[in-house]
Length: 135
Image: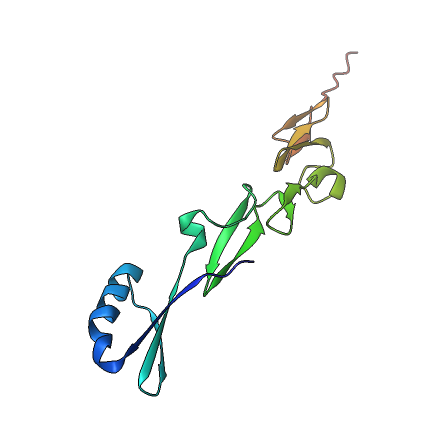
C-alpha cells in the first residue's frame, strides 16, 4: 500500500493561520504533534475519495490514517487489489433448496427449482398429486 502525507513545519508564532487553512481543507482538522518549539501537521490524503487507490474495480476502498486498505466485494475473493468471482455453487456456500439447482453468476448465484417442483429456488415445493379411486 502506498502512503502519502503532507508535512508542514513552522514555529508556534506562525501556527495559527496555517492551522486554520489546513483544518478547512481537511474538513475537521489535521493531526497535530508538538515537538518543542516546532509544530508538525500531517494531513491525511484520502486515496479512496481521490481515486488514486489501487483497489480492484470490484473491491471497496477503506481510507486509513496515512494509507488505505482494499477488500473484495461480496461474491468475490482475493487480496482487494485483485478480486476474482467466487463460485458459491462449487464452494457450497449458497442457500439453494436441496431440490434446486445452483447456477453461478458474476459476483453472485441463482437458484432454480428442479423439474416437478416450484418456488423461488431457495424454497421449493413438489406438486401435489391427488389420487381419486373410482368404484
